[in-house]
Length: 179
Image (tube, rainbow, N blue to C red; front, side, top):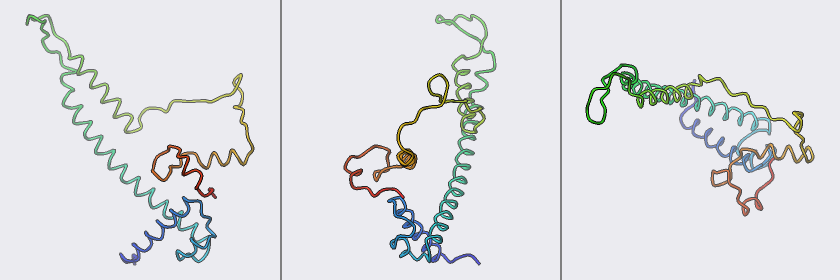
């Protein structure tokens, strides 16, 4: 039997609070996390994984619907401009004199841009191979201790309290360390 709406709301609120605390670097065994109603740090950890998986599934479904809608829009635009890009029509000079037949070059350019956009949207293009190498084609030299490198890796891609990736000197001084 599925959980009641009230139980689902309680679970969502608890998970939101858990995520907020974890984003601040609060460890799973901290009383603030256990006070949310978790029986152990392991239970909190498992619930966080469930929350992330649920969100990932929901986001994947939304992205799929978005891709389908955008694909349909691109198809409609492509259908509208295709005849001008593929069928020869009379071509006139500036004085209105007939000079021959041809396709609309601007329409061809539009078709190519639509096809390119559609391929990107649907992931049809092969990924570009990119390789980063150090001096003489060897390994990239890294400086710093392993702990410093791990800290940089953990901070990569995190957003600040304003929801952006910009560094704020005031916030950095007051932030808790990441666990």
